[in-house]
Length: 280
Ligand SMILES: *[C@@H]1O[C@H](CO)[C@@H](O)[C@H](O)[C@H]1NC(C)=O
Ligand SMILES: *[C@@H]1O[C@H](CO)[C@@H](O)[C@H](O)[C@H]1NC(C)=O
Ligand SMILES: *[C@@H]1O[C@H](CO)[C@@H](O)[C@H](O)[C@H]1NC(C)=O
Ligand SMILES: *[C@@H]1O[C@H](CO)[C@@H](O)[C@H](O)[C@H]1NC(C)=O
Image (spheres, rainbow, N blue to C red):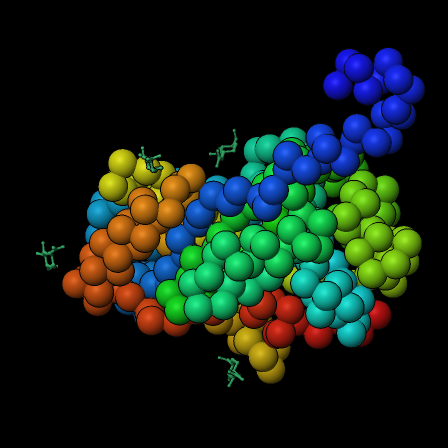
């Protein structure tokens, strides 16, 4: 290498050799399973004491106010992207997430990682996290990047209004998102972004099988906008496939035995995008 440089070979020639060391991204895993709201929630729409004690959860919850920004015709979503803004109780600032998704076909996780690699997602992108979201009957590769934006002028769990939401997402937009289809594709679309949501969710944090287990309750408007559907989702994270797979089987068995299980693969975000119909 020293010799080549000494002979005047430019750094540009060396660079591809360095990049070649990067392969597909290495994901961690999050298992998501749904619970039957008619069984696990009391009349106050809180988790029953039996559910809380099963997962060693306190009665206190963390409120998280979630909204997505997209165009009225959902151009970001239809291109695999989502822009999420969250206000997490007692944390300073808004949490911004740019997330790209690819369905995993028939459990072929490596195939999805290789496809993502061909789109430019590689293990050298340290600011992004790759995760396999493992639902009851489906898996999705999610690649995301997070930022924090100032919540000055807002209080409690309020989310930013439309204009502030647009500008904080535009000013933080990372290149992979912004130039996905063409230069400035992302920020151009955000210019006409509208709010899907907000949904004031509640998270309970417990322990199960030696790892943190969360249960989130999402009150989502129903499709006619005249009532609320409660989505209750249990989830745990791990960095390895073996634990994700075995843990998922064990958790399904436990939930089934308690008659808490809902054998469905609904994604909370998909439901928000389907059921909220902002027009301006
Ligand atoms: C947030 O802070 C308030 C006031 O200190 C406290 O009562 C509440 O329990 C906190 N919530 C969480 C989830 O920590
Ligand atoms: C939405 O909820 C309301 C109130 O519970 C109900 O009357 C209506 O049928 C629901 N609509 C749909 C599409 O589920
Ligand atoms: C797999 O993940 C579990 C839980 O996160 C951890 O306890 C275990 O040590 C991991 N195993 C390996 C081989 O990394
Ligand atoms: C199955 O459920 C019953 C009744 O709730 C409970 O007593 C038993 O411990 C459960 N078994 C397992 C393996 O979770």
